[in-house]
Every structure is written in structure tokens, then in C-alpha cells.
Image (cartoon, rainbow, N blue to C red; front, side):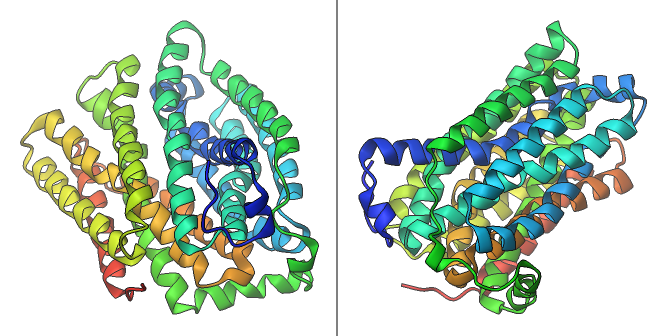
Length: 402
């Protein structure tokens, strides 16, 4: 794997083998979050019946813990480096997964999902920060696209594995599997280098470092890209949270087949990510971001109109969501690279805030779905359209940079 356009000695010293190992580990760390939720999506109807509660709360609880914990880990990683928080975080993730597996009611599993998220959040947050530590703006966008191609295996495999597991065993086994995966990831960290050397770490106290969040929130350039991604993810999580009801309950899709309908979107994301690896060297990142969000908005509007009118059935929904979701292959990579490029000295905190808003956006989605559900796909449709349009408006405010 060529390491062109790097900006640190560590990046330039990476060989093909060490570079591949680095990318695979970071991809797996980013995939942990998707797998933590996607793998049990087919089991949600069974979990709701077994636990006698709303299974969607397990997603909400995870996202609450996920977004809050990132804000704590960000300054810690800027002060003490990237590897230590990863070790601690994966330890917490393993404990939380075991707690979920042993839960017997909805309150217990929501608690352990929050706990699980306290550790899971370190993976994607610090993977982004480590890429920013090592690579320049354009190369960072390319690397993030590469990570998304590899990590996309998780949301493809997750629902498929979960659907098959729920067929032959209980949903508890799914969380035991997550605990095993977390253990394997913890072991892989011994092959991961520290990307933030001591001389580049923040010298301020962790408590004082939290003041960086105010500076980031008032940084217009950074927030434009961050809110663009955040609004898009409100829409994305509306699909992730709402699709089990739409596909399984409303359209009667077998839980074992739901995974294939979910996976087709990830295939699109992977394909677009592969194309984006080349596009970032030919076009400004901001231009790519605008065009991708524009295409996603058109697809979202089609989804909202057809679900509102009740026409097209599941075929149109699958097609519109495929186009919408595929654009994430460009949107996530370009917006993240552009945002972190505006604040290179606090990449850990910046990645944490971005991740907190990005994944915390799912709380908005789940609450809107719960409050406005009318028993049809329309609620999911208009939420996706509304927030994708908001993302497009933010993309239009960014200035092009050569």
C-alpha cells in the first residue's frame, strides 16, 4: 500500500505490510460501532417481546453513551496519546457486551448498552484522529475512503449473521459474539503504533482541554462540515432504526432476508468509496461533498414523496435508500477530512465532537420515529428527506478550496 502525500515521519516509514496492518486495524475499530448495532437489528422484534419493552431504546441508549463518552475521550487522547484510550475503551466494550448478554429485562440491557458504548466510541473517534495525525488533507480523505470500504463489511455481515443466529439460537448469543470480537480487537492493538508523539501532545490539563469544545463550536469553518455530516447522519439513522419495522413488520420481509436488503446499501457505499479514492485527487473535497449531498437529497425527496403517497411499494423504497446511503461513501470521508483540516492542533477533541454529534444524531432519529410513527413508512421517509435537505444547505455554505 503506497503511503503517498504523508505528513509525518511515521507515515513515510510505513512499509506495504505495516501500512496494510495499520489500515485493517483502524477499519476494524471503526466497524465495531456499526457491528454493535447492525448485528442485532433482525433480532429486535424478538428482543422486544422477550424483554417486554421497546427494543429501539437499546439503540437510543447506545447512542447516548456513545456521543457523551467521545467528548471525554477526545481531550484525554490529545493529552496522553491515542493507544491508551483504545485499550481502556475496548475493555469497557467487552464488559458491556457481557452485561447485555446476561440481561433479563429492558432496563438492564439499556444500561449495559450505554456502558458498552462508553468503550465502543473510542474506535471510530481515534481512528479518524490517527489518520489526521499521519496524513495531509487530500491523503486523509483517501485513507478514510479506504477505511470505509473495509469497514463496510460489518454492516453487510452484521444483519446477515444476526439473522442466522436468531434462527438457531437466542439473541443473547449475539452479544456473546460481540464480547469475543471485542477481545480479538483488544489483542490487535499491540500491533497498532502510537501516532501522536509526546512532543505533539497537548500540554494543558485534561480539564482545561475541555475548553477546546467551545472554540470548536464557535469555529464556523469546522462547524459547517460537522453539521453537514451530522444532519446527514440523522437521516441515515432514521433508516437504520426504522428499517426493521418498515421491512419486517410493514412489508412482511423474513428477518433472515432483512440482512440482504440492508446489505445492498453497504455495497453501494463501498462502490462509491472506491470511486472517491480517485476523485479526491482530481476535484476539490468541498465540490465532491456538495455533489454527493445533492444526489442524496434527490433520492431522499423521492423516498418521502412515494412513501407519503403510498406508491411504489418496497421496490422504490429499496432503490431510493440505496442511492441515498451510497453517497455516504463520499460524504463521510470528505466532510471529516475537511473538518479536521481546519483544526489540526486539536484533532482528538475535534474528532470527538464530530463523532458525538454524528452518532448522537441517531437519538434525534429514534425519538422522531417514536413520536410521529403512523404505522407506515412515511415517517421514516420524511425524516430522511428533511435532514438530508438540511445537510445540503450546510454543504452549500462551505467555500471551495483548491
